[in-house]
Length: 401
Image 1 (cartoon, rainbow, N blue to C red):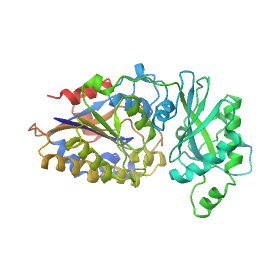
Image 2 (image 1 turned 120 degrees about the horizontal axis):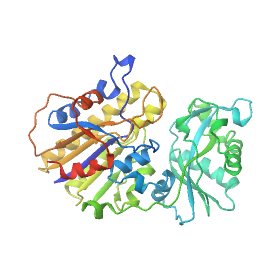
Image 3 (image 1 turned 30 degrees about the vertical axis):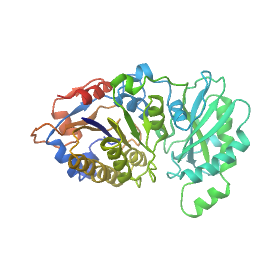
Image 4 (image 1 turned 30 degrees about the horizontal axis):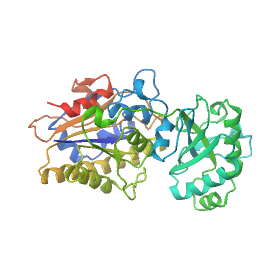
């Protein structure tokens, strides 16, 4: 038996008037999910424990079977693992987003945050801009490390953890109230704006109608994580398939292998087919028991507030990953169980994460079931199935009867 998690990041949502009071998941054309739902258990699960922030960090730890209250030490340290940052026990890691803020002639604190991802800037462009920041700001205990797209890392040696605001939580708002209280971090953010706003690459981006990556935004502080090995917990050899450093870092910390998929970028145009093929190769011929396919696109489209693009991201997940993977595994006579779910909702209305329960679908290719339901939030609620602790879903997947 092989095991698969297909994680549509931020896929859950609220009913929207423009969709006839349906959610994007309910409205989307998802024939593969519809077929699976009729032969699956569906229900609701709470992935984010009470009192914890609804981030992809806590929620994905939960889905992978790690209780966030026990294992979570901050978001950025997990990403630091992914990009090979040599963290010491006394180091503190910060996420360094390259964001877009307004460039009107007002004091820095009165500017507005426009885009937390600088238009999903390419890794290549971001590296050029981060180099410019490093040249001016990397000194003393502070060290910058390039990541993927807009997601980068700042390390403070012998540092301290600060409470900082995620940029996607304050889109469209004046930034003053959300800047760090720490004078050094705040000063580096303001200096990064002066370094980046007139950088030739950003001037070229603006000519092309693209958002400039004109400021560093620090958040997600934490210390070096210590995760139990996934194989030791579950006796399964696991493969992580994701474009996002956070998920790769969780995998590294858990002793899982990470697949490299060319063209996987965390955006709407990510290489869905390549991710599917990587999972199939790992399970059918690579000696792996478990594959975790993480797709960031629904979450990014939720942050953008685009109903049409979020629906398209969900449909791409269905058409290019779930359907083909099921067909290929069955054709190869591989028995498998598949868990499909979001980590958290990213409602279009809010453009940020919430801690609301999410719908799951649990399928076993060896079982013959027949249900008259589809996979979406409303029908998952009506099923009456509910799991209060998200980290129990991994055991459910591995022991499903």
